Length: 66
Image (tube, rainbow, N blue to C red):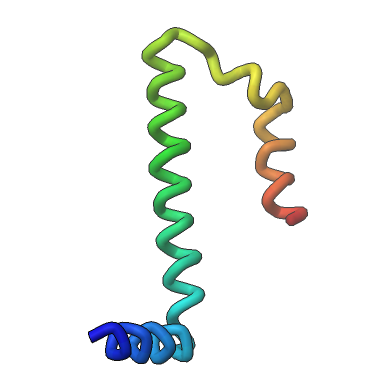
């Protein structure tokens, strides 16, 4: 049984979809955590203005430059 699991693990790691799937799962977990923190801050009455003090145009320009 143990050798079967090890063989399956190596076969899974050898596929081209393993790493992108891990990245996608990590991104989903990160988004969920950030949205939860944001909702808790809003419920606690803490404004999100401390996070970014710039204008809307500057906030749009940041991902465009990246």
